[in-house]
Amino acid sequence: MNKISSSKKSINKIVNSKSFNIALINANIYTSKNKKIFSNIIETSAGNTGNSYIGEYLFRGFSKYNNVLNLQNNIFFDKIPDIKDCQNKDFIIFSFQDFLKDSLSYVGQVDPFKEWINILNKTTGFPIVIGIGINNLDGENLPFSPLPSLINLLKLIDEKGGIICTRCNRTTYFLNKFGINNVIATGCPSLFAYESDPRKKIKNINPEKISNSLVGINGIFWSKHLNQSKLLPVLQDEPGFLRLITDEQSLAFTDISYNLDMSKGYTKMILNSIKSKKISVHGTIEHASSFYKKMLFSIGTRVHGAIASLNGGTPAIVTNGDLRAKSMCEFFKIPHKPEFGFANTQNKFGEDLSLEKLCNFLKDHNWDEFVKTRKIRADLFKNTLEIYGLKFDVLEKLDTNENNLAEHRLNEINLDNSSASKYLINKLKEF
Image (cartoon, rainbow, N blue to C red):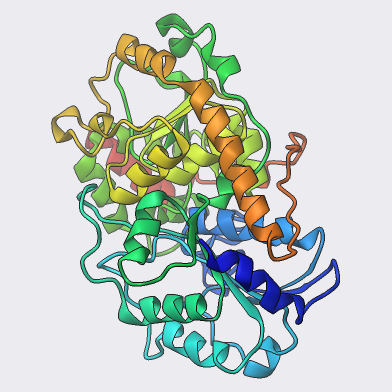
């Protein structure tokens, strides 16, 4: 980490005011592609809801003190910016996610990482990467062959004295193996939004309380022992279900079949919830977190569903077993129980999980360590940026009065005579 000190000297010559001009890349705050599919339902969801949380949080956090331009919203779908738009920018900040994996590919004929190498070589903006992480479906091994152009972009940023903030220690170790040294593990920034304390809801938890309280379902999870009337499925960017909600003409049967193959109980719960309009759709990170405040806890495969839950002060369990989930949960001391989900196919993603076992796991988790670690990571993130003179607002206060636009929109939808309603009726008859 000796480069960080020397890097500060190099940019002091470029910027010397308290307010900087920042170009934000890959924020995922909005895309025309998703507006067309999910109009009036999702406020800030692009290719992935978690990605939009990160980009939205960075945009809001930097905007309080700086001039922020969302220069390229989605690095894969949006055209490469004109180099003149990158001139006179003090910082070029890349909002990345789990790009370091074997399956990463880019859409179309243009390699965005290669193009950004060309831009950075012709501009003076100080480069920073935030939120990049590794992933592997087996949950154990590091990626074998990350995209070469991405590695080359990170190497160039390192050579220019820039800083790469990773999601976890494993990602930092992985990049060090490629000779990329100006790297620091600060964690996924979306978890720094709002001061929350899930310990308050854990204090008096018991099986009866679990059975009579609202429980959020993030991604795939369903237990026959939970009170079905108290389950609140929270959709993020599951396309098949979202098309049902928006009553698209071409329903994504294959996407729904994908969930059906994994858990019939989960799929039936989602379809019933859509039919009865008892469901939430993630909008902004603040909207999602305020919605989770109503719940006793949440559980499921979606990592950023858990993060939104924790930001709202509600305990969460992540059941996804991939390396991204494992590393992020490990780094932040988030409850991680893949044997409740993907790691135990006989369990049908929670179907036979008893309330006693679930209760004991929630109570036995070291929530003191989670609260402490979260604060340490947030301070490290802020302090790392301040080395370069950048101020960042961590958004400590959650506005619980924010309207749930997605919920309101859902209540306005008339499914009674729609093609989606007919599909739901026929599908539910199969169970």
